[in-house]
Length: 182
Image (cartoon, rainbow, N blue to C red; front, side, top):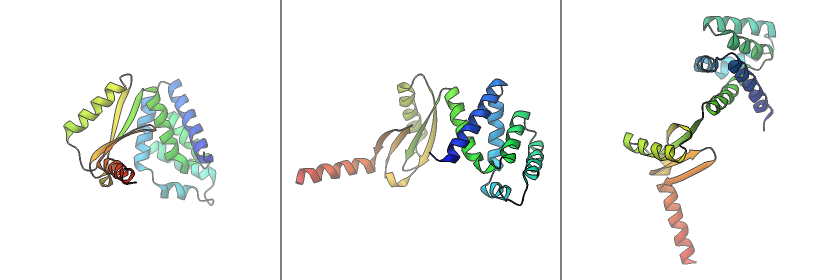
C-alpha cells in the first residue's frame, strides 16, 4: 500500500471520528462534497509550492473555508491539511471518508457496466436481484457504459464480478471450440 494512501486513510478516520463524536457525519460529508466539486489538482499543486509558507497556506484555507461557511470541524480539518502540506491528498481522504460513511450506513455499492445505455426496467430488474441477494444492505448502483463488452452487462460488488456480457460469452464459446478441436 502506498504511503500516501495510509496517510489519507488516517486523516479520513480522524475526520470521521470527529464527525461522529459531534453527531455531524452527514453535514461533514456534504461539506466535503462541496469542496470536492471545486477541488482541482492544479489548485493542490499550487498550494504545494515550497515558496508558499505553511502560515500562508493556512491563511488561504481560512479564507476558503469562510467563503464556503464550513462547520468548525471541517474548517479545522482543512487547516490541518494545509499546515501539514497534505492538501494534495484531499481526493484520497475524500474517498476513504466515503468508504467509512457507506460502511456506517450499511450501503453496498454495485457497479453495473453496460455496452449501451440500459432501459430503466432492465436496470431496476438487476438492482432488485442484487437487493434480494444482499437484503441486509442498502444498494447503491453506479452505472457505467463500456462499449467493449459488446452487449449484456457486468456487475461488480467489491471484488465479486458477475459477467453476463456478450464479450465474455463469446470468449467462453471460443475456448470451448478450441478445446473441442484439440
